[in-house]
Length: 388
Image (cartoon, rainbow, N blue to C red; front, side, top):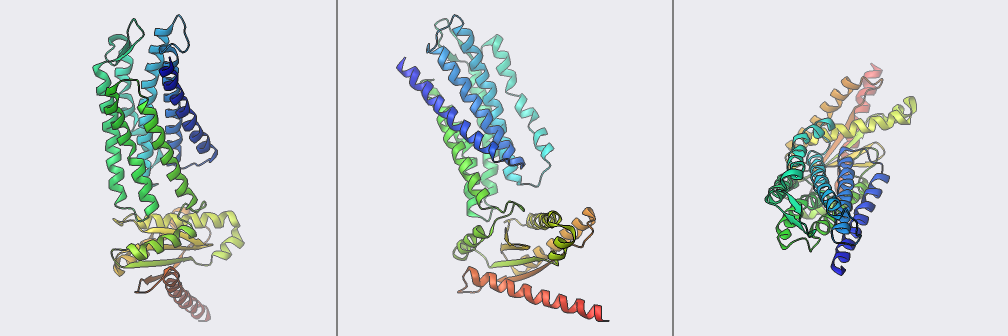
């Protein structure tokens, strides 16, 4: 009985821990596809661990009833159904993290319909053939051959997305983002480890401990990312930018470039059409920057420097920097045609490359100086055109 109580207590602690992660995530009120999949993942595993806790309570005799065998069978079946759903939710979260905003949310849901249905079949059939598990006359839980097939499926599908997450790491420019993707990918190892260690039997609550620790790490990583993000435009904030440039000044492989981007005549947009429209204009600019950066194998680092100014840090060549600037302008032109806004939304871009001995403020100042020259030239041209 002591062993059963300890087992139940560990599961209860994991239910409370994942329940808290779910509560905090829901309170954050994030509407991104990635965060919504993560909330589903937390909810799924909280329910999964609760089902196994109830199985333990009845199967191990902590609560004795005339229906012990039936209740044990129902709660263990529920455990497998919920585990299947939770793993699929993690896969959905992984997919949105891999693609990071460049996908239609509806398509993400559709692509997981079949993978989520596959494991349900052996779980439901188990009511008749007991190939997954069964409860014997002594109320002892025993696994069948289908258990290993099911766990192999969970391991295989999670490893598929885990490998894709690791591959995605090589395209990321920011160390925080890389670390978060690696932590998320390690979930696949938790499922595999759980399957391998389950050979020692049900005496050790391996699955709930491994997964709970991993979910906690994912939650912490997600929060670290959110703290470093600008809430309006969903790009990195100024504080994270400075830290990143300092890191890259020491760890860059090719030449480092900074693009200082300023929204042209932003104040009149705010004054004429209001701050809500001004915010919408900034979001459109941020979206144009994100879209422009997607074509690079190693995605550049985007940040909002302040107000209507953005900075992109690029590791590459002068040609890469020029190509990126052209792509930004083209994306804004396309956005203008699509939005049909009553104002013209354009940007001025100053580009500066790293020179030996520069610190972060020198590099930013150099890009700002280039931006100032471009804006001066633009204003002179406009004044000359107006004069004529």
